[in-house]
Image (cartoon, rainbow over all chains, first blue to last red; front, side, top):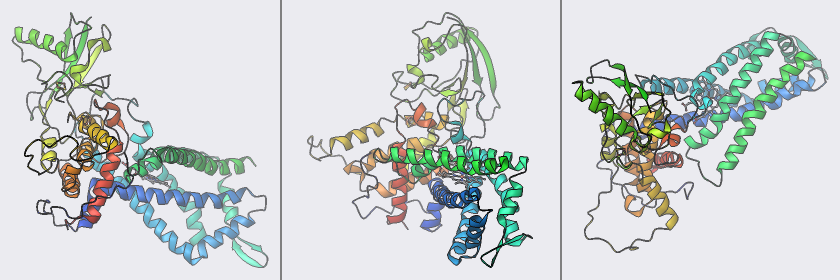
Length: 247
Length: 249
Ligand code: HEM
Ligand code: SF4
Ligand code: FES
């Protein structure tokens, strides 16, 4: 492949023989198989940036300050107007990613009504690439429990408070600390992060392919960054509850 | 060598179908997989049984007709067509399961024969250039960089066999469609209809009931012509660019 975005040189196309359709060009594009995958890729990559921000917050849990830095950070994240606006975009992104995942997965199942008697195993493709729906579902189950435990408590629950420099803060650190001392939660957390690892190990580079970015100049970078993101991010996430459990 | 076969038998599109076991003795290493089927069919005909129906034509790996899903893989264990697969890829006493391509868009006609008309309809929707060819142009009349010509040629080697669809867990036809769109998008002759072609071929592909692409790469791994996933990325670009900038509103 020679050009990354080789924009055609010819401005006009024959449009007379374009198949008639009654949708707007945009709806038509987005409801095509390629359009759906583009949305999946864009939402997926946005979720990756969210993971990085989320992780940078979580790492403050490991500071030996009784949770001060983490609680101040948590307050900032729930009160800053720009962050608040972004968080609505994030909720929408999650919903679109999940709903489209369902639409795409169901559609793909329908494309093969009768299956094969003999399965190929993983000789021609990786296990994760074929099980994105299963991996996503594990992440989703975790997400629901996780949101109930921290996000819901932070926003609407009864949460203890802490005072730093005369200012009152929700002591989310205390809530997290309790949760991270429950074995079942630490195990669930670790399993979910492993699911995320496999989801991203395929998902990150897949997103670039879906967006049309596949070029010998950049593929090694995408592969490398994808590997780091897929391994390091979930591993650091999982390390936090494990370390706090053992403390 | 002796081979045990489990072959999908199905009388017609309506029939439910099922596997039937056969023993084939006197199989030589040098036989192609199809020749082994010829031997079996001769025996079936002699016994007044219905021979196993399968597609084949060139038997030299260029027509793409010989669709068989062998032991869980399109065209069997080697990355080639069934006609170019030889019995030396198997061992004496092996049990080999043979199934038809499985896809909603490729209904079974009989036994191992599927209807790949969906591919033809995708080509009809845009896989061509509408120019009268006239006389033979001089060589190098239209300058095309060697690299581009090579890439276009690589894409053009797709034989429309459908192994990509058969291999894909989503029965996606993206590798086939992307090879056809790429081949013409890279050459000057393909420019006039470039955007409309991408739009129409993808639209036809979706209408035929093929799944979408999960980028698993199974198609590339099984394609007898080594069509690369770069084509699918190019199709994604071609399609998005066409949707955003073409005159088709
Ligand atoms: C933080 C969480 C998540 C991140 C960072 C993430 C990221 C991604 C990325 C980057 C892709 C690749 C897109 C592409 O192939 O073009 C992807 C695909 C996918 N995601 Fe997620 N995802 C997350 C959560 C979920 C959840 C909760 C579900 C489902 C319940 C899900 C289901 C899927 C599915 C099914 C695909 C593959 C679609 C296909 O190609 O067939 N993901 N994800
Ligand atoms: S892309 Fe490869 S596997 Fe698919 S139809 Fe063409 S030659 Fe066959
Ligand atoms: S019969 Fe033509 S490719 Fe196999």
